[in-house]
Length: 80
Figure (cartoon, one colour):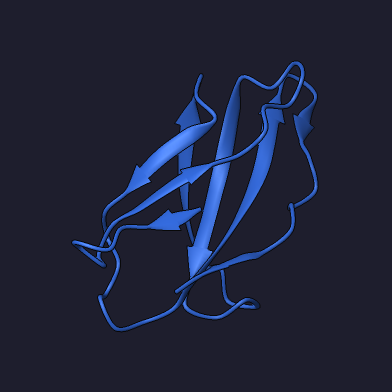
C-alpha cells in the first residue's frame, strides 16, 4: 500500500491474489479496529483508492470472495 506524495488523498493498494477468488472486499477506516467501510472489487488484486482525508491515517484489510463464501479478514495495514 502506497499513499501518493503529491496528493495525500489517494493511495495505490495491491495485494497477492488468492486462488479461486473472483472478488475481494477491501475494508478501510481510521482506526485498526474500526474498519466500517468496504468496497467490493471484482477480478482485480489492486485498487486506486481516492477518498482519504489528507491529514488522517487510514487502515485497510482484504477479504477474498469465492463461490464457497468469504475468507477471514487479512492483516490490517496502516497507511500514513
